[in-house]
Image (cartoon, rainbow, N blue to C red; front, side):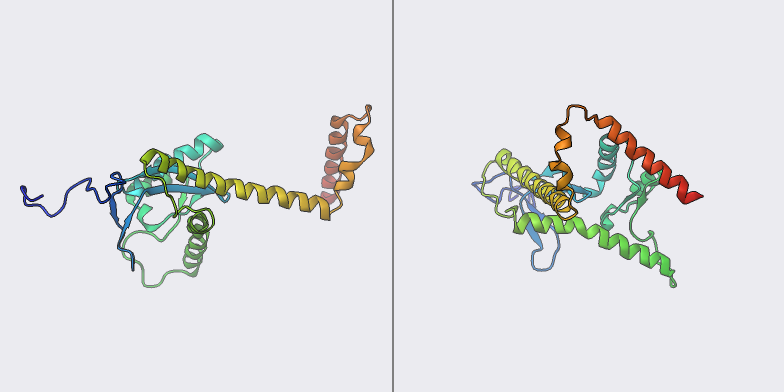
Length: 226
């Protein structure tokens, strides 16, 4: 920097014990500069998926297409809507989502009209409240699962620790879902069916029981139409 008379340098080292850590300017009130890994994650049905982890600063809006393709590869189709921050609403991302029938949350680009319809305002408010789920996941990972207390020094071990933190977040949600399912069986008295001796009967055929249920549903359905 002194020989070239520069005031900045790429890949600047700010920690001798962690030379891979870079300062990332965020511009937030109270913390304009942050140090650590930058993550690009998504939230589907309250489950968090880590897509990108980098120690260098990057533009997260470039990850929208890759995450959309990963969603299609996992679930077999594109999502109906994607709820994102304002930085993701670029013309390129809007065109990509429009070609695939995906609704990208947020207000239209350009100068906002003076009189915006109440329907558009309501939709934008609902999208923003829906998007807050991913912000809550970050807070949950930091306060409860120690995401902001990563004590590892090497980049490999730090990345593993961060990935394991989100894994535990998902496992905690899965545990609560199993617990809720158990309570639903307990409260509704379904445990009696599970403890019934007929389930140990050799003549019991599961397919017959399923067939009876299907016939019952079909009968009720046609009866409701009539």
